[in-house]
Image (cartoon, rainbow over all chains, first blue to last red; front, side, top):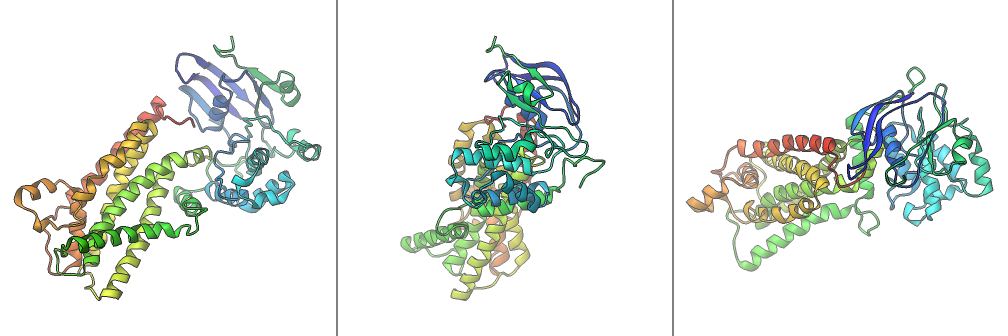
Length: 202
Length: 266
């Protein structure tokens, strides 16, 4: 369960409000989408849920482990291979590397990707590795800060169980919270969605 | 792993995270170069060789009756330890900030790992430098090794204190991040690399009493050279400059987080 209690999140210039005393409850096994235009603070909301950013005021309660925003590739060191990056992340988080690498290599399909320096990968391969890294680490709640993109049909097929939430969830866990700009995509992939409007979008 | 069906937020202790970050730093720093991590050890060597060559060229003998390389090393190593620790912590705060997304990694973990890595690097460098000098020149061994280690450790501690403060302030201000190396440059001339405190005239000695780095190098020389007794023997001048900025850095960090003053988005 993730609970946001009277959370206030201001825009970077502090003149506007992205979240104004917002309450939000995400139950276990529930998929929630954030529907909002560009620049209105979707990523900030994702970071608040993940815990990598604190709100200006209000409280955030989380039960269990929340993933970092799926698709985030910022912490992949360009000179290291994805495999080595994952091993380092395992050292930091305390998870054994073998299961994480197994899931990551299954998601990447082309296993050679894991043994090439991140700098030599194409942007889509990097994105795939970032998503695979995020999904490989066990969590009770997964937060996607990007549209989960698996590209070719073969990859889409491989990823279907993930988007259906079957493999992502643990016994009593919730499915990924996601963010999207697509009005049609939100209801298709989520149980419920919330809209965010910013002064810029009005 | 799971507790009541849940995965705990934290599976690693701070010490484990620091060790993991140190391993990552070893892998990534200087990566891609031909010599790789050897650069970390070559830097002190090149500094010592440069200063010894400078002394030879200017015809200035070592103020203490010993090998010039050993004299320079006892002054230069605490200085390098101090400066490298500050630079490394400032770099780590910015370069590794994206790892803060990986909970439970915190800024303190990044900074401590960076400082600890510098201590390890310089400890290895010091062993090689002092070992080679003793082996090649037959110079005297340290009279009081504990005092030598104290001096080196306190120079590192001063670097950790000031480095933590500069790293936090550097996250808030680009101007400060760029100004720190310039502001610290004069410390090279007042840290006793080329001279000892006994050589200084009264007024200059009173002035340089306020140089904590000179206290560190004097402590090392006092401990190493049997015939040398330093007039600078004040532990307060080493402990206070280490502790004061360190405590201040936590206040600055709290202010930065509360005021959301970091110039880097999380």
